Image (cartoon, rainbow, N blue to C red; front, side, top):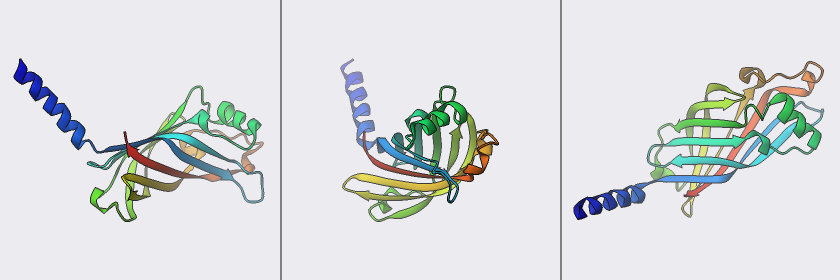
Length: 180
């Protein structure tokens, strides 16, 4: 019995020692759906979560839709109730992998391909983008940007205001990842 307990403790300790998962719960996701010379349609979420597994390059991110903040409370209300239906679809997620990831190269800024599945408004689509990673003082900074189309995620924009929305929504993500 004593040997089993020692082996179990050693296995748990070894797993904890070699765990290379970095995370944050205060990542930033921004989007901009503005058309030039019209009203700004942009928001920021400062409470996004992200996990990077340095051993495998697995990359997962989650943002709560209701956490996006706009300059106008009315715009925020329309975003949550009419467009994103945040009570029905409360989160946006990304699950993917950093291709050809090498944790040893993180001391200097490195750009990688990031592939995975982005789920918004209950619709999942495969995406591929670039991600910039740099390690400094035991933390990893991860940033990326890409575009999505509302129609690809079944987000309906009423024809009355459609001309005010960009067809390609620009999205930026920034995560400062540290040990759990």
